[in-house]
Amino acid sequence: MRRSSALLALLMLTLGPGGSLGAARAQTYPSRTITMVVPFPPGGSTSIVGRVIADKMSELLGVGIVVDNRGGAGGTVGTRTVAKSDPDGYTLMVGYTGTLAIAPSLYRNAGYDPRKDFVAIGMIGSAPSSLVVHPSFAVKTVAELIAYAKQNPGKVNFGSAGIGTVGHITGEYFARATGIKIVHIPYKGTGPAVSDLLGGHIPMSFSPIATTAGNVNAGLLRALAVTSAKRNRLLPDVPTMIEAGVPGFDAVLAYGLVAPAGTPRAVIDRLNKALRDALASDEVKKQLELDGTEITPSTPEQYADFIDQDERKWSELVKASGVEPE
Image (cartoon, rainbow, N blue to C red; front, side, top):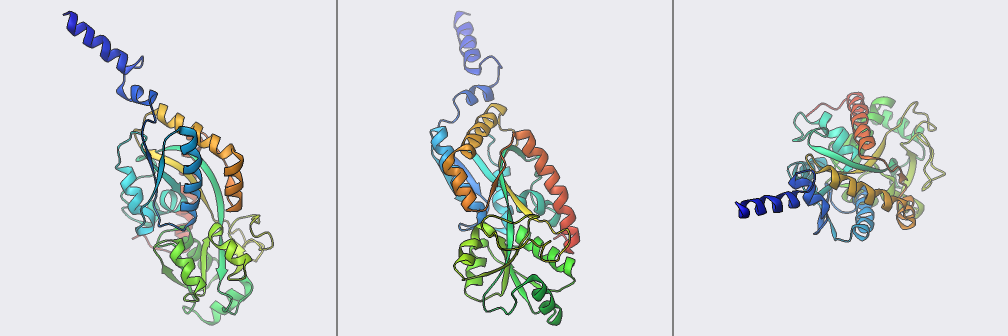
């Protein structure tokens, strides 16, 4: 009896006051390396943002954070993997508009539910896409592009990071809004799409501003517009789509951190604090500003609400784009 009582007392001590193994684990979290999944190949804006955040959070948490790029199917392959991972706080994902807001509407079965299969940790920020063209393409404004496309229906290609990504839907939305017909060329990430654009293999692309601004400023690409409602500090002389004559056009992409559903609340709170502290640091502010990202820290609840609102917004844009669910 004495031995049984001792074991029970030890078990209760291990479980803690809340009486749950999850709470006990959370008290010692993190105790080993964390994997942060970016569901796209290296070189894209999601990867850039993820690595900046991972480096600072690793320093704040005192453990290594490995960024794992798992591209495929517009980001849904990596996202499905994280949805099925153990909810122990050691597998996280950089949440992104394309995977959490667009894919559920674009695919009849994306393989996950952004509301049920993930728990929000916190928001990182938002940034516009940019409409960029190769310098050899004989258009210098959005109006000239529209006129050219109307004279050459179905003969203008545009690249994106893949089917179902922000660049894809933004391009289709632009075509529907302006009454033109352009042909989508999907790539396995923003990096490959921009590389082909720089090489002149495609004439234009809708790509995150973080991946195009440097090439625009170097004269290697020409920016016609940004897709936000206001101009971006990286390309202050480039007009918004609204300024360029496309009324009401507003299609920005957002980033945040999520974990598999069921991750203990104490772990989420620990990660949220580390994320907010990272976003408040001067080095992260500077790096993200250089990438054109507007920092918007949040609580887990605020980011969960944003994911819900963003999914509803982009489901309407998917409909407006004319892209049929696959």
